[in-house]
Image 1 (cartoon, rainbow, N blue to C red):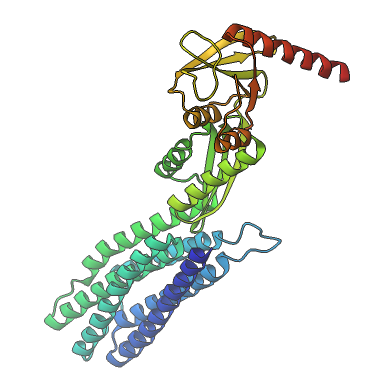
Image 2: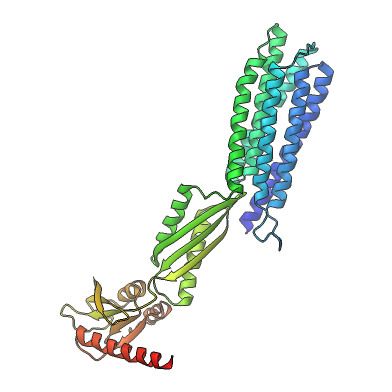
Length: 402
């Protein structure tokens, strides 16, 4: 939460900085344009004023985006995307103005004090170049579409300033080259505007997160040993933030342990994926019916305890009491090793000569929802029949109660 608050303050600072820059450039260009009589400078002042309006929209959206109310419990993050769409329209308008001035203006005007006009535009060009580059870097770090759109708009202002300088230099030497440069730059502006517009619209329509990002999240989830399968994963963005909806199949643990596992997965996702607002994880046990039993045995299938077993035999029992040996795991007769394995292989019962003596092993089995069944039977087959008989009697009593 502290990191999110810090990023929010940084966004607001960049938005305020953009507002101050565009206000200053608008006034500077307008004064210089009126003084020199340059229509290009006056047009650039109007262009910078459109940047100013865009900056105000950006600032308002960044300020309001993180607000959460009863009416908007998921926040107003999409205001950033709405703002980016509006700013893209300003980009289209700026491109239109450049083309119109270059090719469809019939006004003949005399520019006075060309040196002053060039000096003012050089200042504008340098400041817009530096600020746009820095803001683009900040927008990527903060994952803010509104700041990125604003930075692209300021970059378009830099390109427009370059056009004006070329035109003024042409005036100084008696050539008119600005309209050709205007045509090229206007295409770049339209391209930038379209990218910002399409990106904003996609988010407003709840487009999925990027495939690479979803794959990264899947890897994080599958790295947890309790996860059997990801049934589905959906993600969407709103402004700078991401929302995830995940459904998992987990090994059969106790309810408390399962909650702990889910919390661990969520914490890992939040740590490795930036700007996660919420992660909703629905989980199901991998088996909802039947019984899975682990038998601790030696090489001859004689029942042993946690400190002497050489093999774990895992048996699945259906509701019709049909049995199937699903796995056999060789072990070294160590309580902690066997306890770790049994707690992670999704069993309901572990059959042993004795309970483990180590309290840590007992605690781990209890948290994993595994019952330790002590038996006096000597062989695997005898112990299996003992458990099956007891389970049948239990199911019969349950049926009578219903």
